[in-house]
Amino acid sequence: MIIRKLYRFEAAHIVRNCSSDRCKYSLHGHSFRCELQLWADRLDRGQMVYDFGLLKRHVKDFLDGFDHATLFWERESADFRRSIERHSRRWVRLPVSPTAEQLSRVIFVAARALLSNTDRANGDEAARVHSVILHETETGCAQSFAADADSPAMGEIDLSRVVFSPAVKAEWADPKMWDKLLKGARFSTRAPEIQIPDARARRRR
Image 1: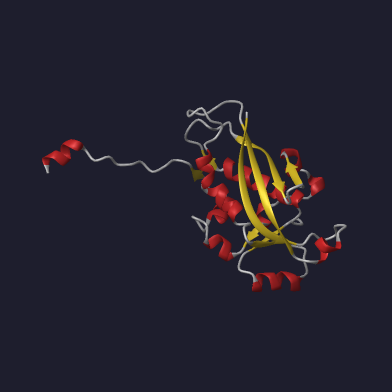
Image 2: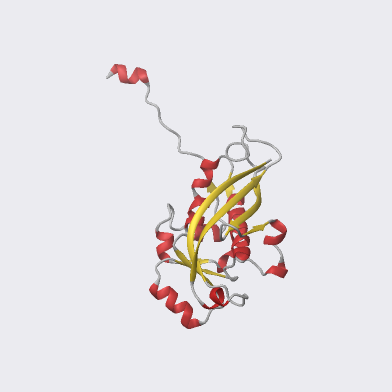
């Protein structure tokens, strides 16, 4: 079974070496829509593939990192990189060109890593990333599967080379989330236990 969670973010990029002069020479923006699809061959204790509420933690913060950010390829000129990092508070430096195709691969690899590094607490161990569909416009999108995300022919997606600006990380629930992921830290989906006062103790007061 496949489930889908839809995210939205606004971002700017330049697509070097493409056919359109408007796209390859000028910064421009898009209203991106990202469909994260999860798959499992069995359901958890709540009879779900994966509780959408659990995605509100690390996966949602990761994708929010792209919102109102300038996305740029690490191979841009030093002058361009310095200009973006100096004049924009929110930016993301990527190991690949920020096309819809490559962004869908980056999101796939990152979402897979975040889920893989999350300790499952409700019998949802079977859930994994099925695909990522990234809509760049109303009529155009790219869809990545595991084979695409891991394809050497499309370029290696090394998450250690995905760099979020300090201002982006500062707005996350855990500003060190990305650094922890890169170090292999484990994340938990377990909610803190709620202490319920003993009714008999209240009566004795």
